[in-house]
Length: 115
Image (cartoon, rainbow, N blue to C red; front, side, top):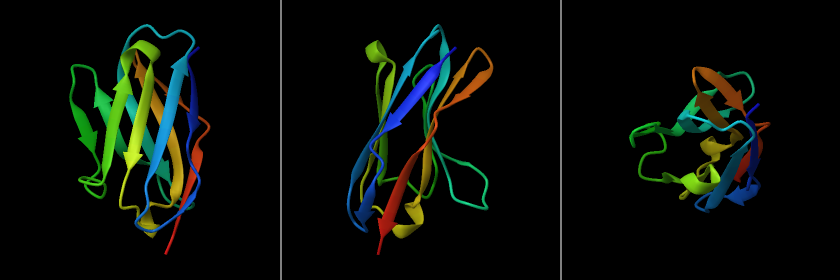
């Protein structure tokens, strides 16, 4: 059973930076996708940035040029560097893994950006 643990979420002022981390453990065999989603109350969870097996990355248009996803394969860890944060980036950020067709989610970490 894959387990995901996020860290790094906190409150920050607009224009600031944060780095989120997510470590995957337990039953890691063949990760197809690993990355980050976010959700605000009353809205659907949305993609922020992901790695696709083979090396491709996907970014939401709203974060392109401001957020960067990176990873350490040896430790099954993925990071999200968030720069130039805006109040609309406020959300719960979830780590996500798809392995062999099954989705796994972390418990989420709150990011709050104040104006």
